[in-house]
Image (cartoon, rainbow, N blue to C red; front, top):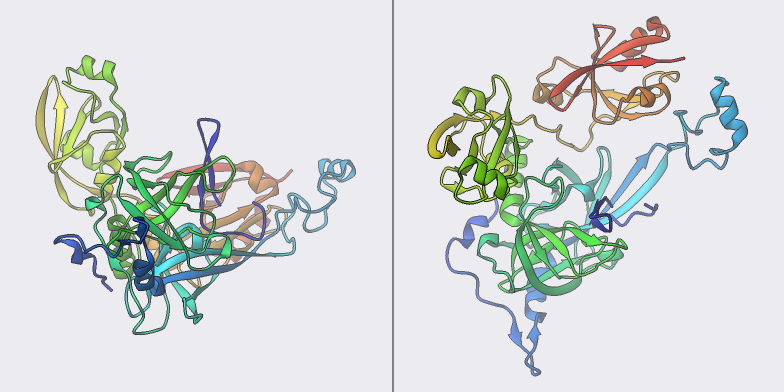
Length: 485
């Protein structure tokens, strides 16, 4: 589970995997007409009866179990905090494997559970990316009839927390895809999943709000509900009363890590767009303008002569970017994109990100006290390397450095626009002290290009006690000095 501290008291918890350690094309066009008739009728007491709905949709909801081998970090060793060992570390005395800062500790098996649902009869399953976990995990899908299938991870998108799985089966039961835009605040919704490992659990509630923005979440306008969602529910479907999926349960607000009446679901249209891209292209493509933005409050609106406080204020423009080529400049306020109103600055990254690179777009921009139209052709947002089943695992690049890394696959190198490099999967000791972290891509050591782990080891042996590695982190390339003494 992933926790985010909010207002110093609330925690946003990814409700995905209940861990044993602390802690192609689908039918989404079917909703263009009127909503599906309700499957819920009042019982003899005048209350909603969800029995018929559950009987129809239940077979397409699945349980997902994940088993992953993780390298011990060393802090679980009972001697980790022993002052004597700390004294030895400070004076460079070799430490046994498994101690803090030492690679080579015994691997630990981590197990987790989550939920998902079948979107095509030939075996495509949707769930959350955080349910699937990291590369190399063994994923098993279990149906309501107790059949189990080893699943292939087609791909994941961490920015929206969506993962697509594929199981080898046919004539499977599928869900109906609904229209999240037509859902109304106050209407009944039903969730199905495996909270705490209890398969096929059904909970009900109402939609509390729509288009919620959460911290560090720029690409998802969440559906907020009061449906009981707990660890293990993540990746499960959120149904309307017509038995159509309108969202994927993903996060909760909680002080305790359990349900407290506020849950969040990813709208199904966002999830299906990601699914189609992962299945068709193997990765997600997003448009990019190349600007830094900030919100517009009442005082800023008055200073710029805006009639109301809305839009995205451009704070800076990246040279050579799509925005620069279109003539956008700091101080412009983006009020709309292709007729879509930008009410809040958080709306703009999502609207731009939904469009494909190379798309020409029309921007409604406020400049010098009046509105004007600007045409821009979008660049591509640097993609995250797609998590694919069977991806190579990292290996120790040299005991004295404390770095675990693997070579980029050809697909990853092409996505990043590099000839090759090493993906950092873990760091301890000198590597961690230098600031190398998971996800960094090492391109060179002392200006010597690196493409394989063995080549990196050879360069490391000749590098001495101090050297510099060139890494790519996100869109930036930086040199990181490393000291082994």
